Length: 388
Ligand SMILES: Nc1ncnc2c1ncn2[C@@H]1O[C@H](COP(=O)(O)OP(=O)(O)OP(=O)(O)O)[C@@H](O)[C@H]1O
Image (cartoon, rainbow, N blue to C red; front, top):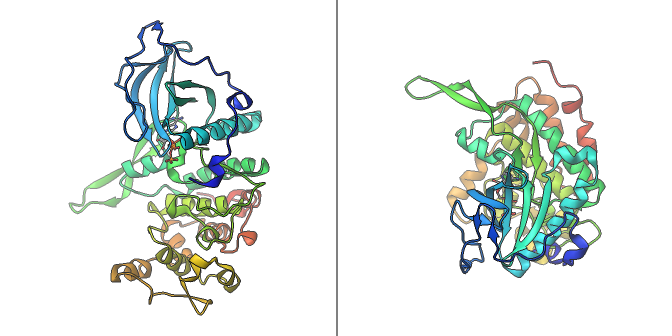
């Protein structure tokens, strides 16, 4: 658990959304609460579809699962609308993290102008030792959408729209000195599930025309504020999902707002190419991939790396690669990666120069040289889109 997740707040202090008194086993409009069952061994709430979650919500389906808990699609009998309820695992550290998430969600909701950018919390309650956060129901994540489309990339115009909204939400969080720390396509949801089918340029082996899906609307919202950190603390822990993790985190240099910007850079490349930029599970290979795509890691960063990261370098100045590689496949995986500008040229036509320039700004090794979210929004890629 990251240190940022263990900042505990009391429920009274946090609840802006009006938590009800603890659930009693009441006979409900529309049914009764199910009999008490033990949680599963990971602390997840055990349920059957069609059951009630308090007397107010009927469980319709499971929409997702993460480290913190499960997200259930429910019918709200009071408002007569569908909602997504995150039912958090009944384990202390996840309950504590959920309270931070609620705090962050309430802070983000304070500014009317930015409400369309981040998922809206409706209320929260504590049910059988599970914190339940009720959200507006959104559509699939950008990752789910890519996956269903057999990882065919999004057109650059759509990446521009996604990028703009993503950076606007990050700029807003950073203005509030909040660091998301877990930006990734799984945590960016389309607002609507509606899509259209269009012919894709790729043909299959039988020379049949392929189709791909495009969302009808480009509106997206950011979710999952369970790992959000406050920019007033020392940050040395390991954060972010591997593929989107910034170099300063791996090198143990401490991290702050720019780690979100690095993740945004990785996400934009992935949306353009259909594949995660750094597909790795190991630090040395990860750093080697970064050097392959972006050029050498600056020496001053190598010199400051913490003791556990020093082993990735030779004579304290150069990455121990390929000598330190664990397998030949690993060396091949790094070698087959394209340089960033070639990768962009492969996937974007008309906007390639400005997109590559933006990405180099987002993916600077040195965090203090990385574009801020606001600077990125002012970049020509967003200001002067090339005519299509
Ligand atoms: N408001 C929502 N509407 C629709 N689906 C949602 C909503 N919120 C979450 N989901 C789905 O549930 C999944 C898990 O949600 P979330 O990322 O908040 O959980 P988590 O336990 O914090 O995950 P992680 O392990 O990434 O931290 C999402 O990837 C998404 O598919």
